[in-house]
Image 1 (cartoon, rainbow over the protein chains, first blue to last red):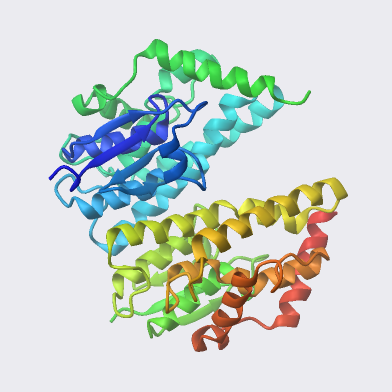
Image 2: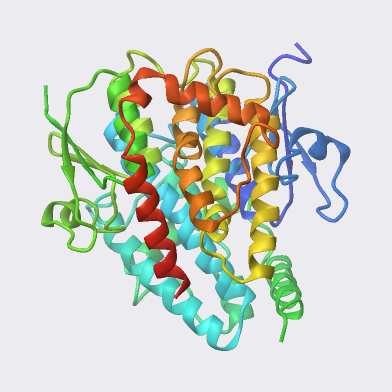
Amino acid sequence: MEEENQIKLHGMWGSTFTKRVELALKLKGIPYEYIEEDLSNKSQLVLKYNPVHKKVPVLVHNGKPIIESLIILEYIDETWKNAPRLLPDDPYERAKVLFWASFLHQQLFEDMGRVITSDGEAQEKATKDLFEKLTILEEGMKEFFPGGTPSINGENMGLLDILMYALFGPYKAHEEVLEMKTIDPERNPLLFSWVMALTELPVVKESTPPHEKLVALVQFIRENALQSCVA
Amino acid sequence: MAGVKLLGFWASSFAYRVIWTLKLKGINYEYIEEDLRNKSQLLLRHNPVHKKVPVLLHGDKAVAESLVILEYIEETWPENPLLPTDAYERAMARFWINFGESKNATFFQFFKSAAEEEQEKAIKETVEILKIIEEQSLGDKKFFGGEAIGLVDIAFGWLAYWFEGIEEAVGTKLLNSTTFPRLHAWIQNFKQVPVIKENLPDRQKLWAHSKRFRESLIQ
């Protein structure tokens, strides 16, 4: 009973990718052991489990490692089929969710990263790209929330909710460091109300790091990136 | 049974992933060639976000993004499965598909870099990725999917045919039987699979297209 169904998550407290997996495990009520990784000094386990990317999160289930947050989420959903279902069963509904998941995970995430790690003209362009993509997302999400303001609870959270929260949950910290709004109730009313609804959920609240810690982390990432830029 | 249509472009390896998958599953479909310089209303309507091919139309449903399409096909027509049944094995397959996709930018860099230093860096990074794919994904297997081809082979399929044209356009050969013996063997095996063999774009046309495309990027 000890080895069987043993679930470990190697992660980093500030990592948006780790956050996704943590949320999924909590939502499904799956007990797990969390191992905090110091990214400047990765444990032998992480290097052994994820030699290709050497990154967190790594989910270890019965001794078998699974990597890449989106893939881990799909694995969790397929292995623990209790509610909430992270992905729809219907292939077409599933395809639609996966399409937007890819949009959030690749495009929006990259744009957000660029806004945080650049300044001057580069940041202006990155910000413009981000706002354009947010507009596209706002439009695309109307299909998922036909009633307007999303009503989400711990029973019906899905993959897109998790990705949205992981990316924009820290919006206040981003705003403080960047001194500008990323997600804006006037520009993106649906997205903003969605993030508000998510951050109010108890299961989300208990996974959210303190504001000051997040601000310090975003500040650190930004300064690090700007320093290493060649003039 | 609702009709299936595929919007594609003759030179697109992304479109071919869908063609191979449909054919391997014996699914009848209508192929519609898109002129990418003059995109059809059908394409713009059904992929308003990216405006790219391939797009799969199934009845009144439209699915975009080649890898999303592959998963959709796999789930809608489960006969002749192309993904493992075991959840963990499936996660591993998805990991490698995702890995390949995440490296598109590096391969593209190899394709379009011209200046010597730029090219050297791109070559180094490309070789590293090919090594990882050969050693850790393919290993000693005949196909990425094991004894028979699966979605991972299909996702990497462009390496078996398009990559040679890219190497030719760049003027640098990276993948051969000495440098990457196992990948090279996989390429030969992959191209022998009947569905693949019978569904590849014309080699000369494709190579000329790659050359032209590269020239347009370098200018």
